[in-house]
Length: 416
Image (tube, rainbow, N blue to C red; front, side):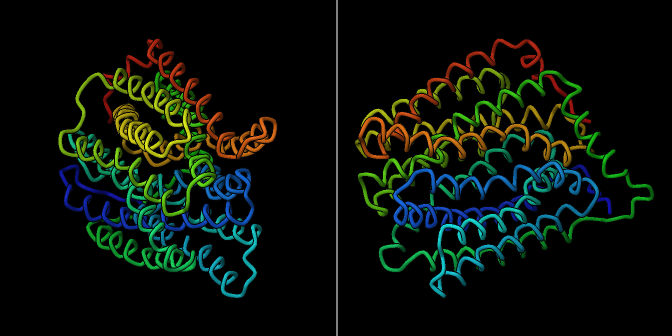
């Protein structure tokens, strides 16, 4: 099926779709927080915590190019509904194991992996639907709203989860997450009803569609450079995302961790609201490099001292700058890639730009544990060293990105 939509403002429909993903993000954040705390308390290892995060992320990464092709060949909203709805199966499996007393690390990893396989269908379809739905002038505001929804798992979920864990256990968090899938699917179904579908007479073969996606992102050197550099950057940024919980849990409780994560993520709320209202105009490359440089410096401050107030201050700064960087990347891709190839293109962009997370999730925890062992300190200080070193390298790479002429030329891109 090919999805057709008039190229006019559908911002209200976008807000409904966004609301569903906002709810899903909160539910996902509850499960992610709860499982991280649970695994770290059971094992005392940053590597075990990182393993769960890796298995939650790896299927989404590996399957995103395939999901991108599906997004251009089939009903995009239906792909979102399948991805959101069926991802609950993995959480149900973990719940069953917990109620029967058999929820070890291997069972949690299995459930997380199952959930992630279905979640992989979501992102390329969501990105492509937004491109279909809105005008070019609305892309920037939509990018801010999308960043805001993404921040909910860091802003709202940790505080709620931290409180709920004081009166109940992780099973309640997982049950709430499963329930949010129902609301998310309903919102997407309502948006889907506004689409006009027609049968595509000669759909491209799967391999050809995949190749077309590759051409869409490689025909402009600047886009390809940004994607490759983004992959390296995500390796450094992944360090703080995976090690923040072991670092704080090493000297504070789960409740304090939840409050700290909420305070830090409130930076995304502030900047997401600013971008959502005003958008960003011009100088996207300069703003991108500046935002990433500040993110790197904030990571250095984040790990410099075992003080929850210092951590919160620099964490707020880090998350405040992220939406600016994401919005710039989002705008540059949308305005330099043909609209009819956005689904498969976003699938490949997600795959390539997030490869760095695999190395971060796979190695950061092990490195933190090793540093702690060598220095005879807690795991938290080992995690802090890894975070600070990653921040320095991120800042240097961001400065280097601004030197590429092909990247600077993306400012005037026009999407067809």
